Image 1 (tube, rainbow, N blue to C red):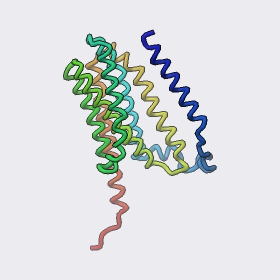
Image 2 (image 1 turned 135 degrees about the vertical axis):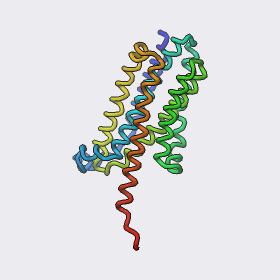
Image 3 (image 1 turned 180 degrees about the vertical axis):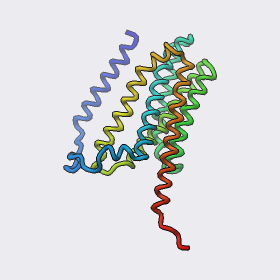
Image 4 (image 1 turned 90 degrees about the horizontal axis):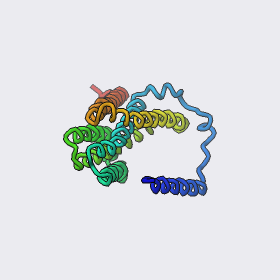
Length: 239
């Protein structure tokens, strides 16, 4: 019964959302969009921009979910009070969503690549902080970095995704991306407890690092391919 109040509140929030959605009139998509027009999905999925967006989104959400899920269990195993674990997760949630007020502005000002790479660096920083100690302050700082890193990398990935499709293609492209991202979240959530109990907290941190590096490499690869394509399309300068 310890968490009964939390589940009761979630039920209330779901019901409130259902009531609000009942009164929202969403415009019906145009006929070409319903017909699934545009390029074949396989062709779109092979583009560097889609690959980078999907890989970055999958890794951002997967790493965040895995580390976040394992954190409270690891803290309790280390002898921390339940209140300390709750405090850390509260700040983690704040780190995830509070930056959204400025992330779009930062992307416009600093560029998509820089924001996505900053997110990857913050995810790596999270693991390094967790490896440096087991005090409450370590868990707190690591989970704030985890939240902000997820925000930058995932919002950047979803922004990049919108550049991969035309209007008639967005339904199937978004569906494929969501399947990949949230399928990864499902697997990482299930794997979190098994990894923590079987390999330990330190190995959880080490295991996620290569994936974050892959996300960063994918972003750099897309940026290089995009710059090369732009240079090829640019008119030659007169001799």
